[in-house]
Image 1 (tube, rainbow, N blue to C red):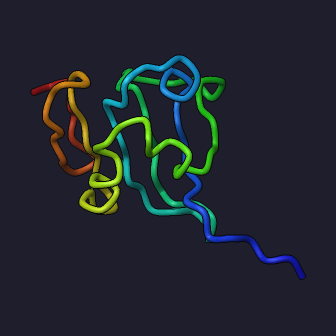
Image 2 (cartoon, helix red, strand yellow):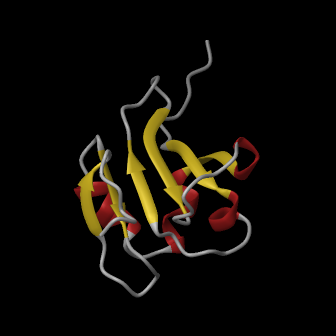
Image 3 (cartoon, one colour):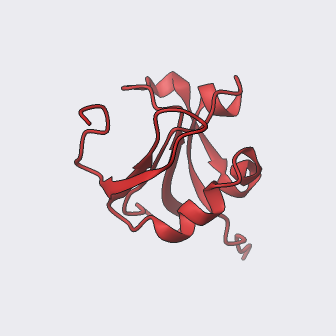
Length: 102
């Protein structure tokens, strides 16, 4: 039987992964299975179509932004972390909050 290495699999939007947009929103949801990390990394757009999302090993993308490793450690499950641009401070809040309202 083949065993899988324990990778941090999650979603990333194509704007970040393929077009170089800054990471402005991360989401930490409950994982759906043993290989899902529950993490999503996004550009901050209000919505993404399925065509704009990729499933990836998140370790591959932690180098995109020096803040990501710290956010993975400090953002509890059921929360989001967001900022309005690359140079702004991160805000961590419950996932149901609307980051565009404040």
